[in-house]
Length: 204
Ligand SMILES: [Mg+2]
Ligand SMILES: [Zn+2]
Image (tube, rainbow, N blue to C red; front, side, top):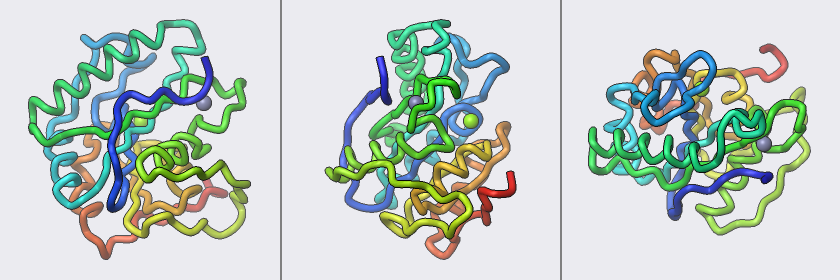
């Protein structure tokens, strides 16, 4: 297996909210979320997704899940975890619909283009949701922030690697605490005048 896993479908007619999973939509765990029973959403993340949808955002979850290439568990397990994620979000708000879940199954040593901070999952998510055919461009981490596809595109995550991936596609970047998640910044993301957190990829 290689490349990202696509677990859903949708169309973007407006901006895209790229959202990390662990520590943003659900509580992360030491040593991964390994089973649906270990998944617990951060309260408020379902309503936050519904608010994004109501404002015209498409929802693209982008998650690094190296346990797959570490052979700890299978893609089928991943799908069962994501099924539970959707169930809990929808239980909180019936409009908490995720368009697309992109997963990078790789480890650092696999040197893929999708493991964040590399933006491959965001590029592929953009291509699917906007019916485009972009490829990973060369990234100059020391250069200026690239132009965005849509000025309101946003990347929300709890790690610098999330910020890097968002930066690499010119998105507004919002860093959250892994205990507070998406609800911590939802008002800011929805504020069209908020250009996101300052992020310098050369100074992690
Ligand atoms: Mg995370
Ligand atoms: Zn990858």
